[in-house]
Structure formats: structure tokens, C-alpha cells
Picture 1 (tube, rainbow, N blue to C red):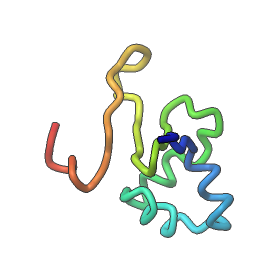
Picture 2: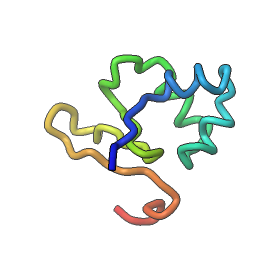
Picture 3: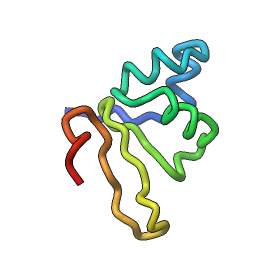
Picture 4: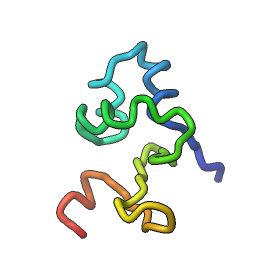
Length: 75
């Protein structure tokens, strides 16, 4: 099985700039899409198989957290 790896800016190109559509695809809020819209080098986020993964606020070496509907209430 191949992992599909992409970024929010790439998805915004596919969605013709529609942030709401991208938010629906990755099960995130529109504000989250807006936050990472200019992270073209994937330094702060990455999307693997439609699961958004972000760098924790701890910075370099910080844990990567998955954000999804399933993990919304879990720390």
C-alpha cells in the first residue's frame, strides 16, 4: 500500500482555492486550512492519506500530533 503524501497548499490548488472543500477532505476546520495555507515546504504540517499531521508547539523534536474527528477529544 502506497502512502499518499501532500500538503494543504497542494490541495488548495486542486480545490481551486476553496478552503472549505479542503477542510472537508482532511476533516479539519477552515481556520486550520487557513493557518497552513502558506506552508509550501511542509515544515509545520503534512497530510498522509488524508490525515493532517502537525508539529507540536514544542518545536524541533516535538511530537507530531494527528488531528482528526476520531482523535478530537483525545490528548
